[in-house]
Length: 557
RNA sequence: UGACCGAUGGUGUAACUGGCAACACGUCUGAUUUUGGUUCAGAAGAGUCUAGGUUCGACCCCUAGUCGGUCAACCA
Image 1: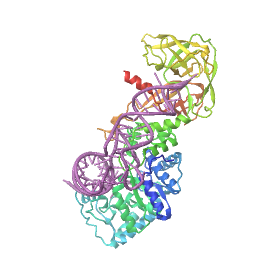
Image 2: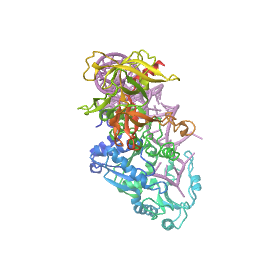
Image 3: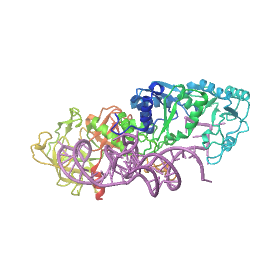
Image 4: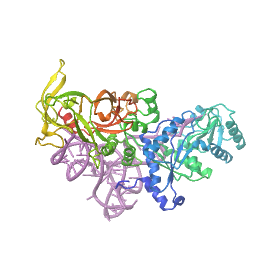
């Protein structure tokens, strides 16, 4: 599957470990989401990496929910995360929860207390923070740091029993308040939270912190390679300290640079804000970079996996151009999407020499890229058609291959027509184009000998199916909204959604199912949205086609 | 004024681990085309952050500097 490129640094590490027989050549990775939001495209890089690494070395991957903060976590998120991973095409060996390990973690904590390596601190959050120092100044020891082991044991037990108020005490590791690494300055292991947990209910009122849960969970599961993003790098010494002092399975942590995409935001906090403040319709709004949003937008699992492969893995900060994501989905959809004709901005065209009331059924291939052309369908042709308003120009330039007074053009799957005249209303808006067709130029039986430069899509008016089409554009109008001036929401693209209330589709589009994927010829890739109703389909634009003409036209003006 | 990490065309990732930089996206030509799509052929674009050093030879090793990122939540 991998290209001719060399292996990434993680593949090299794992390959070496396997070769040297570390852990008997066993490879076990894990994907550890916190169920406090939906998965996004950045997670898909991590998913592909973790599952891909295991697959590549005959290993397995666990799905483990890092659910140690009951206040933000919900079952809804658990379900969506599982759905998204499966949709991407991965299956986990085990479904685990950090909360499953609460009893074990508690015992680990007790053993550290017994070794004199952890203590209960009665200081307030503010006091702890002020004693912590800063990155450039060392911290100070807590006055509770040297409590006896027995007192610590007693206090920790009472913390668990719920004898103390939330925030009144914490359990801390006794390491080094002067460490240049802030995370080693007696990090908090447990805090009191009288909160209901989505899985353990009210059984616990003390919860372990990330640093005293993640590495231990890895170790309990005997994870061989614990892959995470760069910001956890400073946690690694602590990750290793706990494992060493606890004398448990030595999982190893490796960090890589997270995925960043331009013109969007990628933090769950920001995405949650967009949802809560109704800037989008939900986590699965097609404008969202969430996996569910991309799915609804029309992205395929293959395209996303391919994208993850192409962006590579390294330890360098990066910003990927959304253009690459778009390339990946076009590449996939070009091969599989059924071609259909839909006019988004209808302009009436009358073929004056075509008999009134006559209807011809014309065969049309479903996909020129497919082996058997994807089979055929028949589309009705008649005297009155809808064409795209932008396909007619009153005063066309030399490079314009479409319709204009005196110009000839091919109607896709039908005839060559010649434009004779057009009509305008009092505002100067073109209301109708009049053409004559050339009977001998019928598609597939063309004996006219005429060659035209342009081919246009069209829809027969009597049989046209009105539909709603949602045109999505980039969510933000600046490349990096998160670091742009002001609030990131100030930079939302006001035109990130254009709803076409009444586009005109060919009849075959009347009955489709949510998720069905099409290429509306010359307009882009679209998919049926779940908001469709009987007789009134709704389509989402996944991505436009590459548009060379737009480039040319843009240059001229 | 700290510690840690990073730096290769516009973007991202490579370079057989020291033998004068490749692949993909993008860009630009041209061909083909009943989608200004696809496909095909080709081109431009970096001399590898800077300065020293080691070496016959450095993107790769060493030193110093510059720039960027991360770290001071009872979040993960």
